[in-house]
Length: 299
Image 1: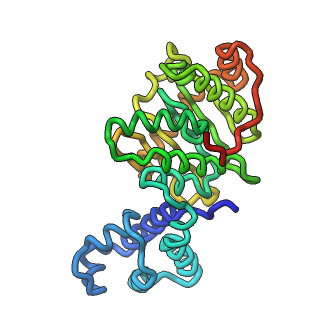
Image 2: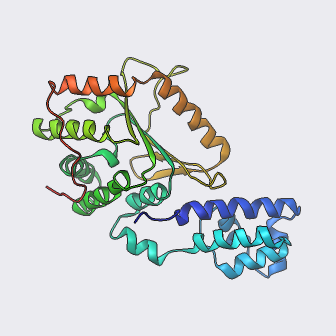
Image 3: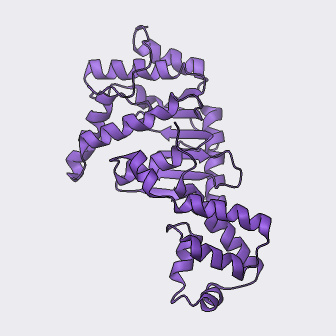
């Protein structure tokens, strides 16, 4: 059964709503904390930024200060309870590391996901063998990655695409992603076949950006990123920008809108889905495409 809306997303939503209410009342952080007897503004600031798991009692106190009427109050209490969820989610996500967990939490409950990758096959589309090689290469630089746990986490996340009600998923990949790039020939071919097979699924779209092309108004982005939109339009659309050490989560409307414009330019520049599949198939020498791999299979 798919996980419900992520507590990470609901925390961000709750923070936006509480900040809006405070500003509606023309109150500063200091004034609110003084009324509630809170020692510093950092507690309220973290709640408004969605950076901490809110205590329901604290949220109720804030709603009292802002004199929120019952219908809106009830809705915010539901959101606060979702935002405070922790134990059940930790159990459901299992042994995932911090970075994999961040992706899994944002993917859960998403209605639309768009991923841009300039070098690697996106994690949701990787075979276990391909994932193991790529994770191992990264672990060689840091020495702090549990490779097998990371691979299992990616496989667990891939269930998102094969569940009965998957999100609309679009992968925008640079043409270089389809190159062997030093991979063993059998690993590369298996990965490309898997990519083509998943692209046949109803809500999965894979589109290739030719390396010589631009995104219309400029070159391709330099960093991979993932974009998430949710069924509830008031849940904040989110962008996760991938870096070497940690990932940057963006929820500010201006930041997300910028990436939405980038996505539109990339979609305009990318090959159509059928032409993208033909490009990959040509590189494979028209090799037969198998059914999608069982996400629980580890080689």
